Length: 146
Ligand SMILES: [Zn+2]
Ligand SMILES: [Zn+2]
Image (cartoon, rainbow, N blue to C red):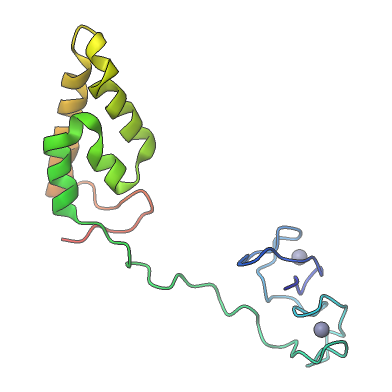
């Protein structure tokens, strides 16, 4: 499909045109179906017959925003018991933090044995914060389920 504002070909699934920044389906100068210029007043494309007034694709909507909700209890318990290895942060998608914790919990033992202590306390605190409701979302901003 094509940008209705500038006529650029849009990548599959794009909902904003990378060329002009206009949301896909907005604009009245090009046909979304064939990319040919159309008259702004026309209701169908004279080149391919497609309707030019139908926004296409329909307004972008995630299928179900909470489909991937993660469990607060599971995340909290992972933090408390396996926090030294960052397991709760891998679970929630906070990968950068999780990698720091797993490094502290493994090769961090070379730091006078303190690495796992630091990441263990860090994970414990985060686990408690998750259970207490101070951390309420995963890395994608999806609220945790109870
Ligand atoms: Zn465009
Ligand atoms: Zn057309």
